[in-house]
Length: 182
Image (cartoon, rainbow, N blue to C red):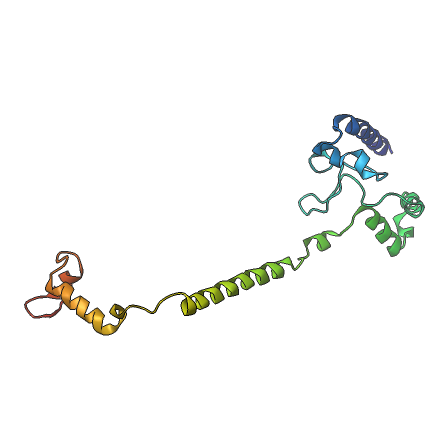
């Protein structure tokens, strides 16, 4: 009982300090009491702000999810007694008044990765089509020097001129036997 009195005193103190520290029209005013309505402050909050956010790394938000109604207030009064007298539906209603989602619902995948993968594949397909169409309509044919006959002739010319005989291609050519070294 003393702990509840102390907790409510701390919460009243927090509630009295929040509007004074917030500047009107600033980013700091977004998470203050004027934005949470009649929702109850139940803790310190994420970074000390009175805001609600479903987060796995911070599972206990500073304010309750819903504003209290007559039904919720009646359930909270009943909650002060024996919990065995509460039905599972009443327990769930109390939980949903304080939290929007369970931890399992927060951790569940949203399936957003499918959208990102689909967009990435669309861009990849578009890039492939652009490359194919560029090859067909924009680029010229390869020069004749790319065929095998011209490449052999160019290799023979490199060997005949002894280009880079120390470490290059011709260093692997045996000029006395006219064949490649092993």
